[in-house]
Amino acid sequence: MIDIDDIRAAERRIGDRVRRTPLLEADDRLWFKLELTQHAGSFKTRGMMNQIVAAATRGVLPSAGIVAASGGNAGLAAAYAARELGVPAEVYVPSTAPAVKVDKLRKLGASVVQTGNEYAEAYAAAVEWAQASGAYFCHAYDDPDMVAGNGTLGLELLSQLPGGFDTVLVAVGGGGLIAGMIAALSSSGISVVSVEPATSACLHEALRAGAPVDVPVSGVAADSLGARRAGEIAFELARDAGIASLLVDDKAIVDARRRLWDDYRLAVEHGTAAAYAALTSGAYLPAPGERVVVLLCGANTNPADLT
Image: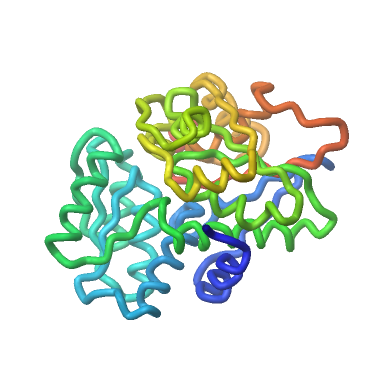
């Protein structure tokens, strides 16, 4: 199980290889953590950087480099981290991955393979290639080093709001981000709330079933929150912490994304907007005086439909 010591070790390991991202005060009880400004456009750069550096430190990073599967953001993070560390990278993405993400992967120097219609199919192909080529497989979310790297975001939040906050709303795909946030913040008494699209709700269904289960995947946020099954690490941490798990529909996600643009000029992915949709739709109602952080985790989107 990942704990605060693992996250502190990750923080020392990745150091200034990742950005310290801004915190925007929306009002006196609401903040946006702007992780969308991270290298490669999402929080996943923290976890991928830690995963690759940790493998190199342990002497298990082969000359064949790394291979990753992604709906887009994990692949971008892997490609960026590999480029910065001088490591070859091959990234498998579904054929449905947004063109903006595929184009950026290639600009970052990764070899890109598009296969299947959803993340699970790209994942299977990537695992097969890793076994055949000897490349180091970097999991997009269910890996201890990935989770610990993501958790550095939680430590950063604690340092940015020394007066404290009560709750952080986190959009969830496979669970790598929320797992890191739970591990980083649970000992501080801060509530971590899971927000998922109703059409791609693998952690919600895992918590209801008592174990990770396969779920159908669809909807406007499927490119970034479209994991078919929650990671074991995320499930165990979420279960043990007893976190709240909320669902929002596509209409609420689209509306929240538009509001982030109209009100704050923040261009985010639909998956990222899911966290804010919990507030704008009323799925999450803060108590009087409750201090809430909304984690805005990714910006790899085509902004054409925001204007």
